[in-house]
View (cartoon, rainbow, N blue to C red):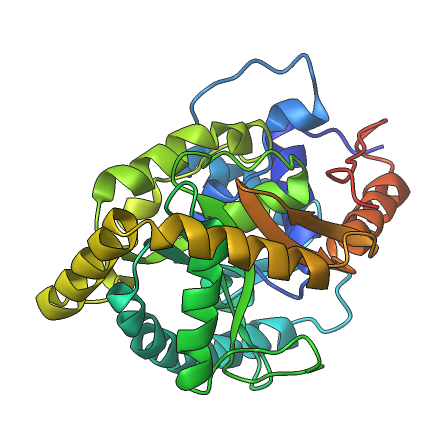
Length: 331
């Protein structure tokens, strides 16, 4: 058995995890996305790490022939694609940049809608690892008590723009996938797992009109740090934020005031809830959540498959002892 430090094991585990997606890591990504060493060794003390320590450990893993490095990207030595994974990642990053331009154009118009507090990019777009066929996943934060009506509004808008992904579509290039909503007073997402922690660590805020909301989201989901050793505040990704438009924001503000003063907001939200609950099937495998705090539509989630592959590779290496990750309670 190879003798490794807990940090070296954690870095290797992180590269193993992203190898499932053919996603080689840079030094900074290995640092930011590092699987918390305490996941692998419960006796490991929580401590602050720096880039120098991570770089030194990456060099040690190269000496042990566990990983390779090419053009600043680190990947598993036994990855059959070798340097091709780096070339593929660079190509997918170029595609992602074009998709980012489209996403920001679409989300720009969301600020005209009442009850929409923020929109995060998620999935492969947030990771910068898309193909031409990739859709555009987003997480939507709505006002408390209006999640059902907010879903109607944003679905209608994306439909008018011709970019809403429909559930009947197997692939939907450049379409907005509205599969997750939470409210501004229930920002904590309680489905804890390595898969979800890594996914949320990539979230990029595209639209918000109150910085405090983004900071609150980050604070409420600090459980991510159980799985990821370092999670920079999403506010660091300001370059992706859409430009606020005063006319659109004023339209949303006065529309919302009218809906509340006239009680139409409450009436329409109840009606939207009643109609939507009739159409939502909560018994699909994966996870479908539908309540006043959260709407999540991830049937046939990849989480279980990804973690199974990860655990198999971890176990077959003979390096990590009894370390094992479970999913977040999928059906």
